[in-house]
Image (cartoon, rainbow, N blue to C red):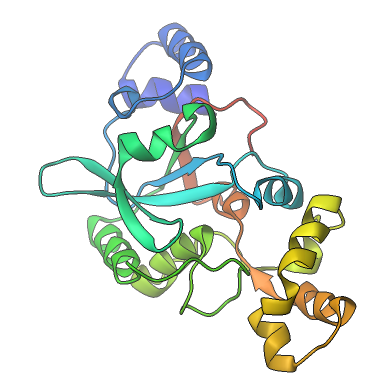
Length: 234
C-alpha cells in the first residue's frame, strides 16, 4: 500500500517508486524529504520517555507520539502536539525529537479544506494546556492522541481513531503495570473515588477509555503518504 501511495504521490513509475521507498526506509527523515504537506495531516513518531515501552506493548505499534500538521504564514510546516503543554514546533525540529528521525505522515481521505481548517483551529484552541500523564478523558489536560481525536471530533465532527477501554489493550505487561503503579495515587479517577490501594485504583483504570496513536494510524479513513518506518510499525 505504501509503495502504491508513494508512486502516486510523486507521479513516478512503480520501479522508481519502489527505489524511493527503499531509500526512505533506510534514511533519517528531514522535512525537505517529505511530499508537500497540508493542514490536517497527521504525523507519527517514536519517542523516548517513561511510558514509551508501555505504549508500544499495549497498542502493538512503534508509534508512541502523534501530532497535527499546520502550515504557518510563511508556508512552513509546523506540528501541533501535546508534549508537555500543547504547543507548535517546526516540522524539522519535531522530526529530530523522534527516535532515529523516523516519521510517518498520514492524511484523511477526502478531507475538505474547510474540515481541515476546523480541526486545526480546534487543536490550536488547546495550546498551553498541560500534558495528561494519566490519559484521562477530560479536556483540561491533554495527551498526544487525544489532541488529534478531539481536534477532528470536536472541530470537524469527524471521528478519527477509536476510544477503547484500557482493559481491551495489552496492559498485562511489566512495563504497563509499573507505569500505573508509579502514578496511581495521583490519578484523577482514583482521587475522585478516594480509593486507598493500588488494586482498587487499577480496577477503575481498567474501565477508563482512551485513544491510542495506533488506533488513529490504523483508521481506514487515513492513508499513508510518507514513511521511513519499517513495514511492521503499526
